[in-house]
Length: 145
Image (cartoon, rainbow, N blue to C red; front, side, top):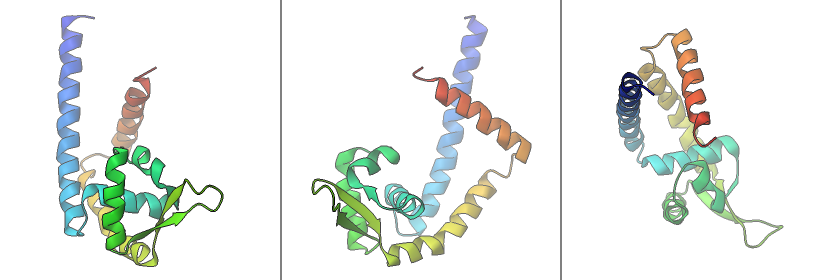
């Protein structure tokens, strides 16, 4: 690989990292206005969109260490947004389950969350978004091959 290719790869890494950080920090500020931290929001969104989930698997789905899940679930349970439910087939498995209060909360905040993300991405045309999605998927999927 040439020196120019290496410099270009490093520049791509820096630009990608900075773009992600800027977008993520902006979205996290909005999430905090809902009275949640980003991890709590991610758990709520997962349970709302994907249904009940084994607590042991939530961490992997939202990229969080399993030890932290108990803490996050405890906080959401205290807020009345989710409950723990024992698996009827396997007593060792406990599910996270969104409550009616949690569903109502997500349904109230999610439309503004979507609009906000859409506005953050509005600098790109629909075609540019498709190209970015394709290229970033290609890059991500190539790692670890």
